[in-house]
Structure formats: C-alpha cells, structure tokens
Image (cartoon, rainbow, N blue to C red; front, side, top):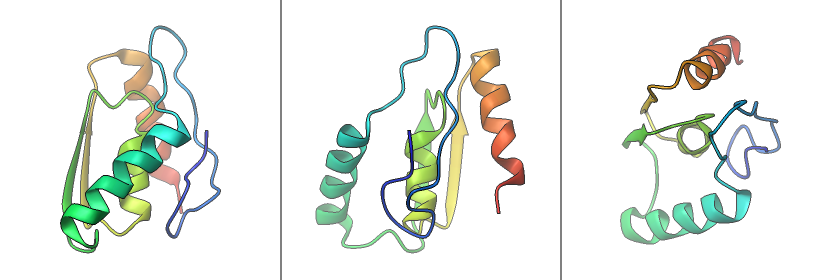
Length: 89
C-alpha cells in the first residue's frame, strides 16, 4: 500500500496483521475524487478516519492537505501500526 496523491505521494504504508483489510488504492482514489468534487479542496478540512486499520485513508487526507486528522481503531495491532507513523517526516 502507498499514498496515492499529495505531498506524501508514493510513500509506503504499513499493513496490519490479523483481520483488518486495507482500503485499496482504487477505493481510496474513488473516495477522494468524490470528496474533492463535494468540497473543492482539502486544505483546512478536519478529517475522521473511524475504524482506521492501517490509517491509509486518514494519511491520504493528510497528504492531500487536511489540517487535522483523527484516526480511531480499537484493534491493538492497528493501534500499534498507527502509532508507528508518529515518526513520519
């Protein structure tokens, strides 16, 4: 998995071991295309990635300019994966 657009385009994402299934590049592209047509841009938007898993959707929003992103998941493996992004530069 990778970020598909924005400032982090091409950056690889970690996957979560277990029952979590990652959101595909194609599904994320469709989601963000729809959001772009609705909002016009992502700059200064707040974004919630609920049931985040690997946080791919939230990180995609951040890469595209969202000013605040919250990622939430109750799974321990997903939380460890999400915490691993703290060191992202």
